[in-house]
Amino acid sequence: MGRDATPSGGNVEASDSLLVARIAAGDDRALAEAFDALGSAVYGTALYVLGDAVTAQDVVQDVFLDLWSRSVQYDCARGSLRTYLRIRARHLALDRLRSELRRAGREERYERLNPAQPEPCPSEQVTAAETASAVRDALGQLPPEQREAVKLAYFSGKTYREVAKTLDISEGTAKSRIRLALAKLETLLAREMQEASE
Amino acid sequence: MTTDALLPPSGLRERVLTAARNARPVGRPLPPLPRISPVEALRRAVEDFDSLLSALSEEQWRRPMPIRGTVQGVVGHLIGVEEHVQRALSGDPEMADIDHIAGTQDEVVRQTGRPVEQTHRAWREAADRTLALAAEADLGQVVKIWGRTLPVGGWLIVRAFEYWIHRWDICAAVGLSATIPDTPSLRLMTDLVARALPVGVARVPGGATPVNLHFVLTGPGGGVWDVTIGGHRGDSSGEEGRPDLMIVADAVDFCRLAAKRLPPQEINAHVTGAVDQAARIFAGAATLSMDE
Image (tube, rainbow over all chains, first blue to last red; front, side):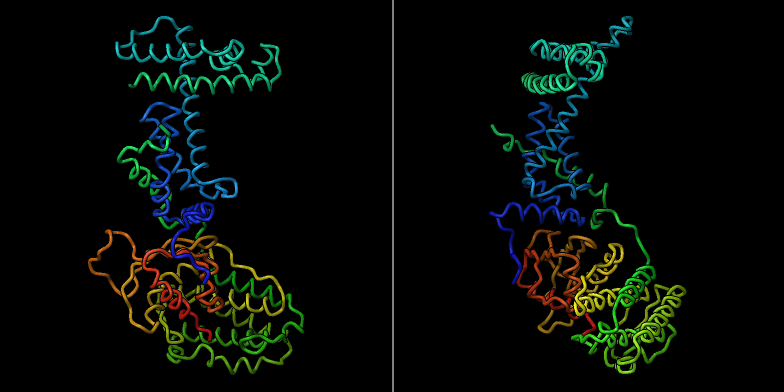
């Protein structure tokens, strides 16, 4: 009889494939099983990147909502569901980190161009100062060529092509320097935020 | 400390599941499907069957088949079935308990050996008369045919299902590749089969232990159904809301099982819970077929 009575613990690919097929069919019990089995790994990944529990929970929700809404995109032949979800969590967490960097960059540019601003309340001043300080400290720890590329991209609002032209390097080199810089900043800021929350 | 050791905060699980259910209702499969009416499903099935018949050579029409003698005999049977449906929709009480097989035998005999173009034309005219009646019918009106009772809409889906299965049979007999219906039509069929499971299982000898079944069909036409088999269960020793039995199977395979084209012991299904009840469920699904 071609029927398995219980899921085979050793056959991860078949188990993941079945779980995702059930999710695609609209089985919310399967989504709950996926969360129970893999929620810790996804949350841990998000928290490691972001260093912030609240934002990490948002990322966890986005990852599993994505699985529920687009489960047909998972291909078990390319890796386990655990690996797939952790990669998704890392991508979404990095996106949020980049958004934070861009926001910090925009704020700094705005303050430079508009010096006379209403006085923020003391708590806002502290938060803004802490964020700006954390970003400046992290930038200061980058190699000079990476720091320059990131500043041109995120604080001067230049495109990859414009960064390449300004620094007299190829577009590929510009992208590579920015990517390496962001990866290093992610690590530095995550550590900074983790230490600040302890 | 590894990232795996970090437990998600309490409440996050429920938050995630609630957001998911709001984004896509439970039981709604991916990718999203347009809904079609039972009349449209039957129309598509008739067109598909007509395309097949048009592609057959005379020799293929005369090819022997396990049921109804030949391909031409199967088409003769379907002409008879259309007559039964038309008479039932018109209120003829004789159709309530007429036998689905024996009741078409005269037409099988009449068509066998006839010029195939004439059989093809007779069938198409019969199918078109049914479609015309169906377009004007009250799909919610309950009608009894062949000893079974369904709303008219359900009968149209049964007809579409029969056309698919006989198309499959003919393709197997003449060496053509079988196809499956379009996904919206297939979904109507799987929904009908799933909802009819309690009726089918009630026909299986040996008593009816109540079972809460969580039934998942995967692939095109798939979906999720929570079905109570054998009446309501009283308080159970199990966790509230947890089904007694879960069966996960491919949608097309399960339809073929329901049509008696796939033996229950050959279906590749994932079963958890009260696994000893699964055989009854599969046997019950097979009783839904009106073929031998």
